[in-house]
Length: 398
Image (cartoon, rainbow, N blue to C red; front, side):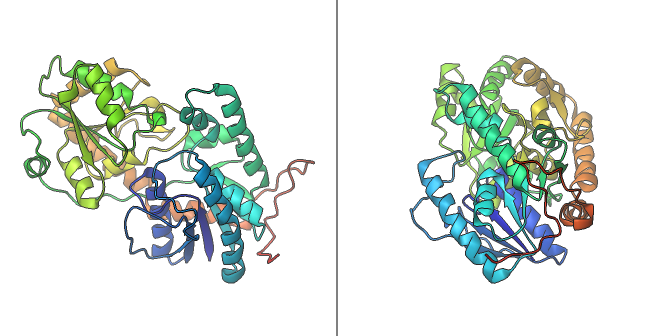
């Protein structure tokens, strides 16, 4: 049995939470029991095929947004005690920690081998949350925490090849399992349900509005696209506060081009995908895997992704890739796809093939088994600051 630890609200419609749910669901499907420890709150009820454990509901926090906060530090501290208590009761084969915060909590609990799964680069992302502060000390702090966790963990995996490269040569790539979805509502039905015009181009962005996403380029791109497609809309499906996007759109004179819809249920997700002609996948910071890209692939919407958003995955044939933060290239690629139905269909077909070959349950389970297999582990050279990895060590109740 594996104990997964994730210091975050769960479940929610955010990418990391969706990735964790997919991983544990795949493990359950493969007959490998797993338990998950998370915060006390989440966005909705979930009938999961694995057991979910929650820390106590104090301090009482209900925010779902990403990024650091004083309240989260208090919650993470509680995760240390809860990890220790759960591990002593469940006696897991290993503890899998998702994100740096969970890895720090699991290592502090000191009750068994910890395997770290990185979902983002803290050194790249941390400065984004503090735009008024100097970048280098925040980046250095994030990097130091990452290096500490990577030294202490039994093994390290990353959900994207680009992130594995950032974290170092000992880091392995762990594919997130993601399945093709059943067809959603027809385009006209979805647009009617969302009160969108039937005869205008609709470009979708489905995700949060944190700065690391780089969503601002999409506002610039829709402003350019409306010069040739006056009715074009940018459909932003999010649980984030939409005020920053509205202000940016108003500042560019395209407030009427912005359509905000809540992404608070599976039906809402199906509707926004069904209503869209193309999906835009931006990314400002390097490292993380945009789960929204896998989700769009699975739902058959043609994708235009910025190069950084591809995360080093071999998706060149499954989506149209444009340079990072280049609104002009995004607009040109969109115009080309809107005028080529066969090209859109080819991208859909390649996206389905890509998911089936690279993100299947078997691909994930095989990679996870290799990560946890003691025979596959080559201990690092022992140094005063990097103790030899203890693959042969079992659970220890301290």
